[in-house]
Length: 393
Image 1: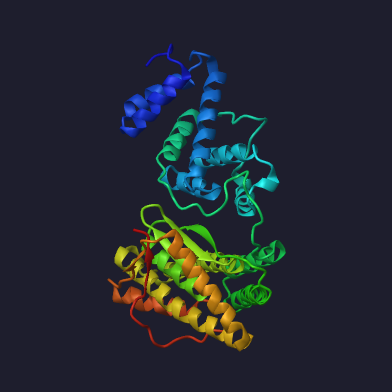
Image 2: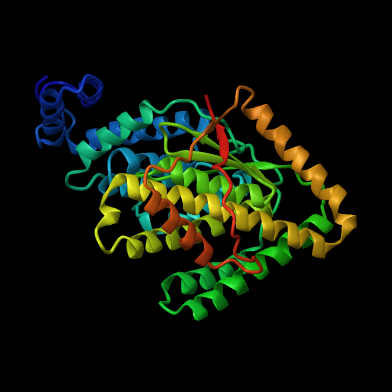
């Protein structure tokens, strides 16, 4: 390859080099694309890369990936410096569709990416160093496996079932943020209790006024390290909220199935408990024990196990207070969720995921879970054997 090669030829050569892990050839192609003398000039390079990126995003959407999924995978495989470019590409491609034809769940994901999305005009202008990053993002998008499609494609969306209204979500997020940031347990419990009460009331109201909603799927990221233990915590939260979680190994993703309001509760509660678990782990290991992988893994596994026990107790109490008339509706909804999981993952298997390699880490994890702030749950005294949860095969 040389300066007489077209931008399209250089881009193809660079992607082929990435596929073969040929760093020397990749750097040469990227340098030629970034050089002032490239055939067609800088504008031609931008046009080729922009077109290829837009095509790659559209192809990823057809293969089941959503905006947040794409950005998450770019961060997982490349790092934060590439995330901003990926977010710009996603936003630019989305502008081709009228807002009313885009599923509300996609629009919510784009709104959450606002801080990372910056663009000017109608093109994805490449800043200094963006040529190499754009090529690497292209490579990631081109190597994504097909995943289950959870939402209608842009341009084809119809009516979307509603979850928790935005005002309630804003209030809950604010309360949980305060609970996670305070160093005073009593104050944290007050904030967490208020958030839990808001979510519980809304979920019960949604069940009692069921307007023909159907179960949905929502993908949540499970970041390394200790993905297995974090997935177990998510499974515990999901099960207690009448949802089902399925982990896709190798991608750092879990798909949670349930009704919209319950999915909102799972996402918010899981995020808060994960923050609490991380903080408790750091506190428990101040003497240096937390530096071992066995200690940390056992701590998080025990934390997930105990949280599951407490959340199941809380779910049972909430149903009893709601009254017996609600039981048939809840049973029917759980059956519908199970059917949705089976339809999308017909070859699903269940495997044990939580083990204790460090007894001290396990017992301290149980204690931390007992101290986690969950409204209306007595602290259990018995720990059952680790649960199992579904994995995609």
